[in-house]
Length: 188
Image (cartoon, rainbow, N blue to C red):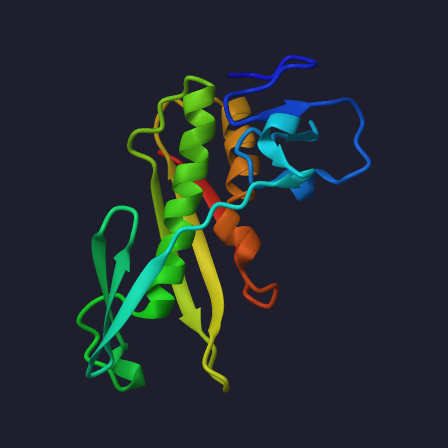
């Protein structure tokens, strides 16, 4: 749904004339597009602050560099293993693989939220993330290269807006600034 001059959407965000705050402050909302500043309504605020959503993840170390994580709200399990180049077996995602996975799924999800509000069909959207680890110590992620393949039928104008929205992904905004995150967008 497009915002009117004083409209709002179901996410509790409203657009209000010129704002003193930068649009980056509200960039976690998929409704942020272009240079249109939008901000939480009083309904979305508690004591003039954004509500904090807390999700609990419980992790149990299984030994042999293998962990099981439980997403408490859904009780879904996820396993990790250290990579072969860091004393593990590489049998499943490493913890840093999950950061790359989180970035890719967050980009797709935030674009999907925008598409849903604007009646766009993004079915078939593909996101690939290439994780590169640093060569020096301490061991850390050096870069996460994001390649987004848009499905057929996306107009040039829609593509521009989807690219803007992709850069507002909360995972991307949460990464350390030393991590390089180039994003490339291609059409099918």
